Length: 400
Image (tube, rainbow, N blue to C red; front, side):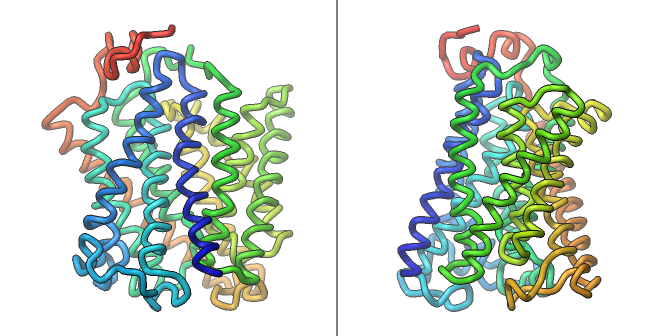
């Protein structure tokens, strides 16, 4: 039963990356649609291979507090038999595949920050290095047996630190290093229905993302199921309410962005909080992410093209803090009580986890991108950017 459930959840999370390709593809200009989709599909190809080669081993194999070992390289000792360290009810290979979909998705999310301007060759090298040197260590810290944040007692049910904060911070760094697009002020989504379809697929896949992180069908999984949907709905209301108040119009893009903001915000807390808390987390997540996208980005002048940082970075940080506030052992006995349930210590642990992830990811990303910059340009030239990356990098006739 558990194996069938996790197989389905793995397929749902896999679907999120094509969903990201459509969501991002609908929000860029017509001359960069397939270039944007290429970022996501390239992550599916490259990270899949890296994961079975060495990425999974570095993330989850027995090692030290900061990184795994090479014991499971090329899936050595990873077979059909369950690994009781992580789950005694599903095949070890199924657990590995489930985690692989997270690694793929994280890289795809990053691409939203630098859309329409990053050199594709530099991107391919970047994701190889980043996956091995950043994603695998952070996953080990948070989820692996012996990882230092797991041992500390910090909580991250389905990837607030591992997926969303790491991708959001990386996207912010890349957006700053690459600089603003030449026509950033005139950029607008070319196909909102396409973005809507992509957003719906991402939302649908998120049920596998959060519910599957319970690794079984039990009361915690069902709490995560209810909390995921509730937070997404509340995120829509939070975003659109602020948008309507400030911009005087509720928008379709704001509606799906609010859903994603709510989903990101509930991810670290999904299996640890009550439904009432999930509604509040999602509502505030929608409002906070709107603030990040429409005020913070404008104030600081960074060009986070498709708001990878505004949605995933800010939403993930809020979700990690909210876990420290609202978590309760009434929902998950393996979790901990948060500040509002009498345990201020959990909030401190959450802040340590968030802070360490932000600092490590930012520094490592800066080092990786500047090393790549020594050997090849990380940004396309002005002519390529003007004509569009579909035509100049991927031999597609421009539609603009």
